[in-house]
Length: 332
Image 1 (cartoon, rainbow, N blue to C red):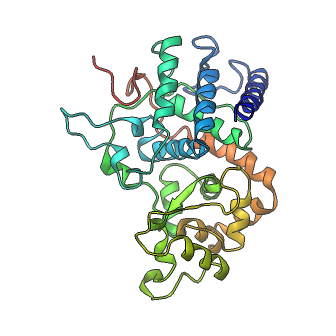
Image 2 (tube, one colour):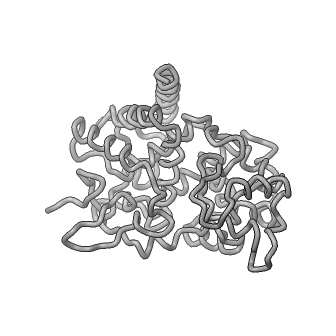
Image 3 (cartoon, rainbow, N blue to C red):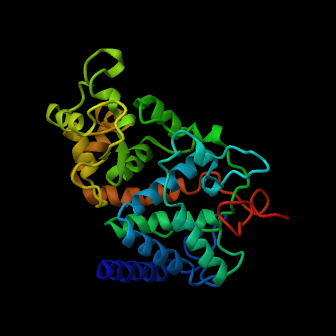
């Protein structure tokens, strides 16, 4: 395991060096973008080292961190609000307590440790939101994804809402609902399909798809879009609707970032309704087919769509802060 961690660290640091040489501190800069190359030159190395350590203990951490970034961005923007805890004094119900996150969102400890190390090296410089965005990138590269430069300079939000957390895309959504959800956040149909490819990593609890196995849309029959052989597999994994078991979202590729998610959708081996509908709807199916046949297209577009998603709700010093501790807002 130590050898694996060391190899990953060397590979990612090489990619980081090439990225800096290619872009420079001012190259490709967009509104609101800045580099930590002077203010905290060791920032990305600290984040990568912390992620590698936690992934060495638990292989599921990269998938958890990637999901954490998605769920952060899709509520009130990529502002680290999903990292906030409720406090005994204000009684606020925060995002991590919402239905899509409660007892399933993970990776908080990894982000908090990275932030502690960043504060020791460069106090008050690197936001929690940037820490999470960089860790999400490294999580995909670590498992086979394409390296991309993460735009940085986000400030952290001061508000976290359980109610707003419940607006995250549902695993039971049809294609129209998903397209609308992404459109409201400035993301295209192609972004929807390619970012859903993040499900090449991780697992899903039986409760998120058990309705597909026996009584889909209250018909008393299974979802007709499930491959019959795969249906038998899912029924064995989830023998009852309330089963606590978890199933890999990308059969046979839970720990590899590749295009097999799309190959499984084409075979009708998708787990969630919100996954399989991408193969069944004419507005999205051609993207599924393309990514299933051309892995390099998926990896390149995923990097581009992640950068695009990272601009949602970008906060600055006027409507945010750089938290000293990711789980609580600063006291002034």
